[in-house]
Length: 217
Image (cartoon, rainbow, N blue to C red; front, top):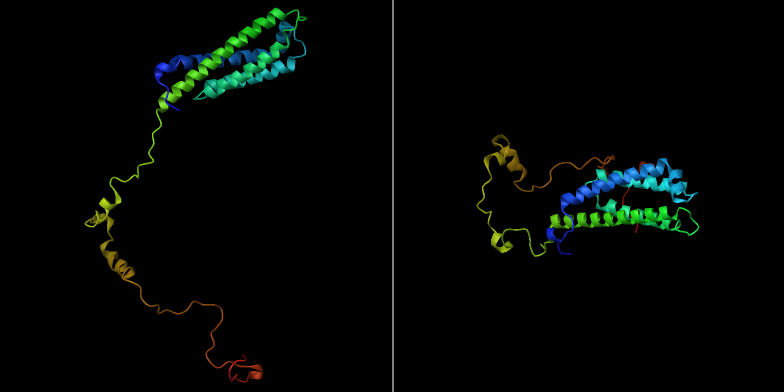
């Protein structure tokens, strides 16, 4: 996807950040009201019996608001708010019944939530656009090997290299180092101990008599 230019975003970075913080504070305030006074909310809307739902929505609003304020990238949490706004609208739609005497209050709340949803979407898109702008275009490095020159041109380039003095073996240890890498010599030591003494004379059979002859085929 091509990078978004700064003039293609609807809001500047500062404006989007300010709007995100405002939405986070609004979310926390609304959540506290829903969590601490659910009956007043349901009474105002003429929707008794939804107190538990209102409190659950309050916890959600507080969580989203805190996440928006403390995170470095609030865009994902703003999209979470959009999903929560959809739940709020679906719940408020049940209170638009003609038999509800507080239907006008429900319509006002529905319009307010719809406006906040539009602000959430606008802010989330602006923050995502700014993030794509700072990220820059995608660069393809598949045709690069990481070497400054082709392998054929580099072959033998270090033949005249001389290691620095502090990289060499110290003078006192140079004799041991040369003996170690002088070359392989035939092994002249003894075999490792296996726990049993090797036989040095003729094998004995039953009754202590020496075994003679060839083994049975």
